[in-house]
Image 1 (cartoon, helix red, strand yellow):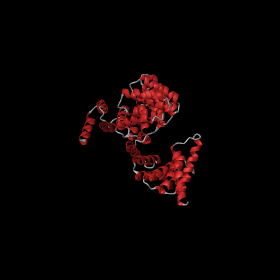
Image 2 (image 1 turned 60 degrees about the vertical axis):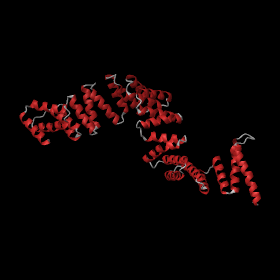
Image 3 (image 1 turned 180 degrees about the horizontal axis):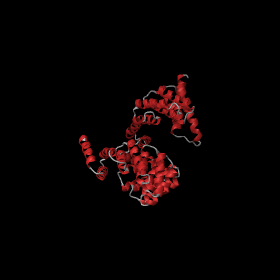
Image 4 (image 1 turned 135 degrees about the vertical axis):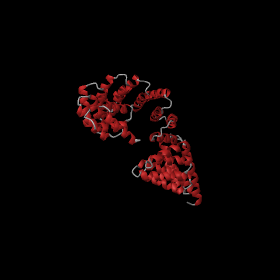
Length: 425
């Protein structure tokens, strides 16, 4: 087929007039037959005098089929043959952008703007270059010019809002995102940007309001459910966040942060069975994260799968040799696991390791250790730790006030002292 086309092209070139050749090239190009246009244009160039339009159409065809190096040579030729025509200037600049020669591309776009200060293509493309270069203040100026040219297009207000956000100017960012939404309230991206910016600015009530509008307008858009869930999460209303995280996941949001927060919240609210799939999913995405292994440790402990919980506790310790607080909690979880497995001696060792991390114990530690020594028959040490429980309790209980833990510790001390007396100790 390719051979037939080349033969046909050569025949056309030999028999057609110059204007017919150009018309045939245009026909291929404007019908999106870019491979044919690129090949046909190449043959015309070999057999005719210089003409910028032929170089332009052939160069643009090469650009369309991702042959940007060829395109640059051809579009540069078109520009050199007619340096005053904006179409050729912009086309040459465009391929320079494609080849990441931003400096010379901007010079060309500026040349186009000297000829036509409101040239849309030049303004639009130079603003994109400034964004790529992170020159957000310059990008704002070009987007403002575009906004004047097309005040009903919310895209430019949106881009200005983004530039101000990159510059950490959230007040101006909010105003332009709001303008974008007011210009086109049917554009879900404008509404999403506004909801997201309100969330980042801790304007939670307003963020939730925009999310509700978005959900009402497009109930299948996962972004609004995610932002709403994140807002509840930041407000520490975790129970309220759960159904919205679940809906976001149901609609296809499998992002790391969404799955992680959902797994964490379900685990923290003791919904261990539901939490497990999400905690396993984030662990699969990042096996080196100590928070991922720690939550799996807690998750399996809650499910009563103690061996798996211990496995992930040990993985956590491998990942957190530098993080004392996490190690402190992990040894606590290990102690709970071994207690549930009735391995009381190992549980006591874990409490000792927990103490060794930060050289401190909490009331719960003293109480749990007392219970463990009690269960292992070490009466003297059990008494010592029960006494420590009472000592700590007295610090914040009212005089003559005794809660259940205080009463139990007091009861066990009495019983253990009696047993030691009768044993002759």
